[in-house]
Length: 340
Image 1 (cartoon, rainbow, N blue to C red):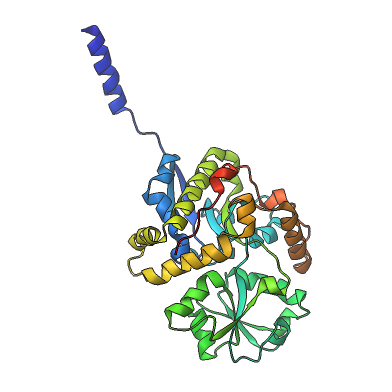
Image 2: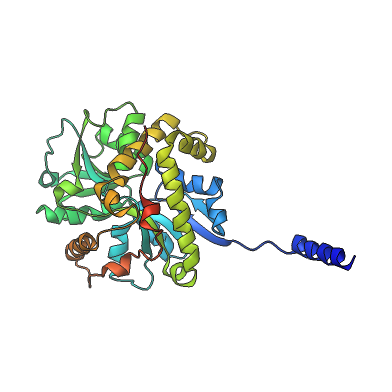
């Protein structure tokens, strides 16, 4: 009898015990909700964040470079944004800049877009022209570096800021001559408005202009990394797992995304997801290292190029801007074949 009473009491205590509080993380995307954000919502819906003891609130973004500012300002703990903006801020605000913990776009998607019949054939031809871009966009932030690499004075280019959703339309209307953009976004935006991104336009990739840079990945505040390292590991594990799931089943990924944004064009966003996966994520480097990691020598060269072009007061070290301490084992980061 006493044994049964003791068991009952123990069970009652467990029932009444408060649930273990989950670590709250405010996470910012780089842009408005698109197919390339499916894995974050997948991780939330499938319980991957919860399984890691995390309560992750996901907000839309205002540009890849703006993600860095949002975290530095303290409004967000983590986000998906641009490595190159981290490098620039690390030189002047080393104690505030976030650190990249999981590289997703090992190939940079930055490009200049012109109409197919434009007289602009190369970067040097942009002098005296109008270049359009959202103020917070990473492509615009990096344009001075690209210009200097190609003997173009950035001051000779008129910059026209615009809302993200007007970027392609203003180029088509002739309001600007060139648009500095993220191929991951604009390629499919053109498809959505019945344009042929390969036939009707010319893409001048930053990589072809001498910038072999890394791009977007998961970054966290220094405070979160130092005070809650297990939470960061859990965040990366959850996103890594969700990313692999989404690449293996894009149709299911887009269905999850559509629950967040019912007006999303499922066909367009699935095509965007697959396009980005094949061109920016499932790269030869990712096949070698596993998604999330980087090559230190390549990153060192990228840091040096940005430091020189922007006259940074110092050149940050790789460990100042990237940490692989939170990555899952390489075997867990090998990507599946990307299905159509």
